[in-house]
Image (cartoon, rainbow, N blue to C red; front, side, top):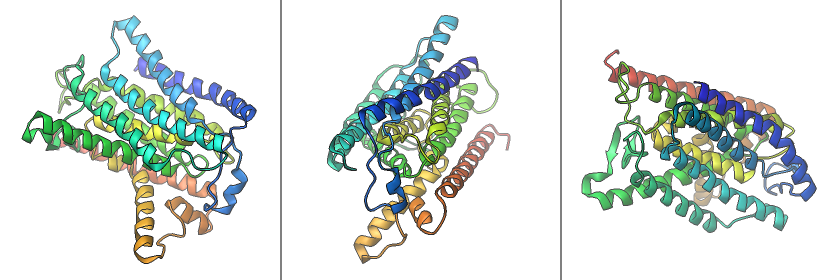
Length: 366
């Protein structure tokens, strides 16, 4: 618990101190956000707001985890786990893509950075590397960083090893690519209003911190009563998720309406990559759909809008993603943001109840 609090506190301090410093730097360099022309006209006033805030979010999470890891090493001689490093790699690699995209936008002075093909290629390379290393690198716990399959909670629903090791590896790489691309883009789509992505991300990672902490308290071989989880280093995962909560919380101080800085793709892609990696490492890939229900809702609204328009040349929503639809329906921006936070809270609460119910059932207590 102390190591978790150290990580959480360090991340919060780094964000609260680092964000205003970054705001001054970005102002000095004139790296302001360029707003999409087809978006709500009320957003044009935000043009020039400092971006690249995701740099501080990424830094805060890494430094928070590092402070916690150093405390555990010098206190208990507990070495950092490969699982934690892989999860951070997933976050930072997606964040790097986002940074390149954001930097291209401010250099070109327009709302277009990396091409769609370039972004997907980068996601493919990093996600593939993450997937392969998850299966190959040894862990100190003896449990794999990931399972070659698709899991709801811990136990695989679909196992990829039915046709041999090579086929399992290929299928797992495809599955991880799907998750990384889907979640990073889902978080990116949600980053459309002041404080929306930061607030909903904070809630989502709070849910994952609780799940990983519960798994660490009921780790297979620990002697804990009830069902136990064969998950690699869940304590590290709980700390990383808690650091993400603190980083988003601290960033939100400067990102609420009117935002003093945007996280940009540097932040949204990184947070999406982190969410996907946590779902893989905690063996809850399908359960993540419930925990991150708000992000699923945002993505589905965009897919429905684009698909229906291509078929009929008509729109289902006034604008997609769906948060813009409610804006154009007359809701104030703050109203949309707070209500979407509340929706995500409900999704996380439902997800936690289902997770605990699953443990009770498997423990024979229900």
